[in-house]
Length: 415
Image (tube, rainbow, N blue to C red; front, side, top):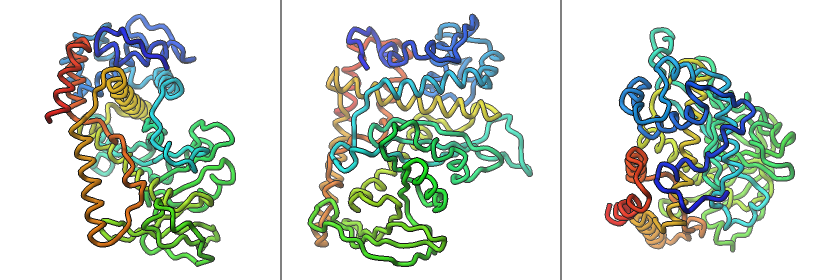
């Protein structure tokens, strides 16, 4: 994706990757009161401004937007299936057109894999949501974080009173879990303990080459089949003590990887139906599952998105799509600032380096080797609050990049 270097202000630069995407959707329609593009920008601005309610957002920020709708039109648009289709198309088109840095490039064994961390994320019900036995039920969503580029996808909103994570995964079907990955590539879904249903994952593997990686629940019992040989001299496998083939009570054959954390001595077990990857690579992939939790922290505590925007499945899905789109635009704009302006979060990079040094020192004291993948230089897992505050102000005031960027550079250097 080509990004112009002559964009005059932060507002235009941030939204530039979306140019033409709404109009290209098959669901796009002309609307003189609120165009699809303006509606999309309005939703993204609501995410960035962290307003607690739609009415509050329109009252406080509406006057500065082009073609701000009336309250009734705005809230009606949140329940529009057509608008939701446009937004879904835009999200997919952005993922196809944008270039994200590959965070798994140092693992050649994964060259034929796409790896996703999936998880459910829950927040408060909408103001007008009905009560069940006197209580409003939390609103659930299933998100997918691509572990290569860290782009976020909204897969579905929970249905019913409190749909279980595994129920959402089954509703997506194995083909849906492939997430449009081209034929011939394997897909690994990294999920927490809530996502264990061995029969379903067996079906995913057979139908669509979708594999799972998780941890066993407490009390699970497996039958031992054999111990698998692995390269103990490979520094990436440090901490792995066993790689066993086991069988479940239902007859599913799995790998059970035993691992000791070098800094603490804590013991972990990992389950997978992926047959070929080195055990240390799989341990590292599960470690990076935590990245999606950091993204949820970004959504909840930095963008302050803690409550549903509206009642009904369409409104809830629309909000989920907007949150995923906002995350991806933040990621792309942070990348643009680094590539075109040389802006990096120096303070956070230094903190990350100190944590790695402390881990190496602690492991050395107790005589344990550290997997080399733990020491690989990593990019931040979430956007910093200082970056989000800076961006919010720069967009609101339509500041030129040449005026705004030095301030961000200063923030990164000293805070």
